[in-house]
Image (tube, rainbow, N blue to C red):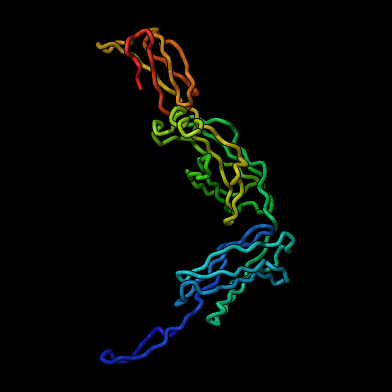
Length: 296
């Protein structure tokens, strides 16, 4: 396509703008057997909705399937599935065709790797408290030791809209993942929906829970919570003072917790108490022997 024009500026000139395929590239460095490999096609001056055809191949004669679709905004992204039985070291590529414009292109060639397996994904504990150091582990096959991978920690959502908390780069060592993470809860626990609030909509209380996903060359393992769910447990400190600021000792209290449960206890001689392993969320405190003493 012509990009330089040396004609005069005081006259009209007719030029022809040509459509073209700028690039056809894989978005991954290796194509693993049994997994999807992402690719991207970029074009220039291709009309919206133009037909595009993709055909995945390997130099050894394996097919990675075909895609027929349309292109928008001069860009098309997709995935091709690498056969389970592809030979390790075979080179895979894809062909691009824009039939309405008679344009064709071929992608770069990348090596095929063995199928990846990520198994035994788990947390070392089932519950976490603020400041706890928790460990994530998994067995990884089909990836060389020292390979860069990512661990993505997500907060579980019953409706499937999981929130990403953090993405941590790490490496495979001895065919395993072993990663430590310091748990903190930075949101306002009062914003966690309580049992009473959710009951109006036919739902039940659910504390913040977390699972992790292992990402290897954009192939993700654990999206169905195979790691299990790590549950957040909180605590509450109770302090009762007189108007003069002196602690009121041994007073009975009742906690109304976010999950709809209750706890009872007595303050110590200094007017203090701490309740551990509390479901996080809004809490009401009542001192039943003191009139009008419910505190949110």
